[in-house]
Length: 253
Image (cartoon, rainbow, N blue to C red; front, side, top):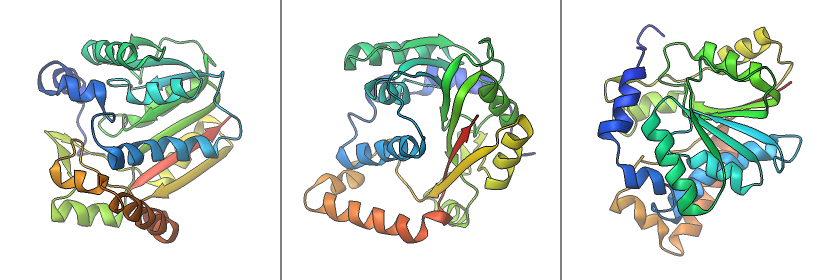
């Protein structure tokens, strides 16, 4: 973790200056059906592992960004609160909720220093929000502290295929000037066990999509190519998913 730097100010600057506001507010609705399929796959996979339905439960979406994950959980019937360090991100999440007709409450908050009392939410979730933090372990501890039933963590995994992808230029070692940390299964297990989590369910899977899909990626939207590439995606993960570049962790209290 020595390569990692504290990027709080860069995160704030990203949403204030660099980010494409309209794209983020509408993502993945504006990104084609194959891109939408890949995004939804991650959350569907996580919810299938949970031993209880999410409908009616309270969920904290930590590092919510522009509210994409908050929208997904709200559409599944959860009572959602989304938090992000950036006030600009929070405002965009609010605009998203108005645009797509779902209800969620959004607040500014640092995932590593949350003000909520212990056991405030049934589920605390984070999607691609820990891999730039200078101390992701502290953030995981905070998530577990305020979770009553479970935590959901979906992040990049330390994988050989990622190293090859970085060498070939498909994946980034740095996003801007921020190092992208990839998590090992063993370290997440040790973090959660230290905090007292006894049941941990971890899945790896293969997935790649550009953050902003271009014209080439949109080719996969055309039928029957869309169905063909979905079959390839499922088969690849069936046989090689355990070596995948994404890691999904469910910690049950």
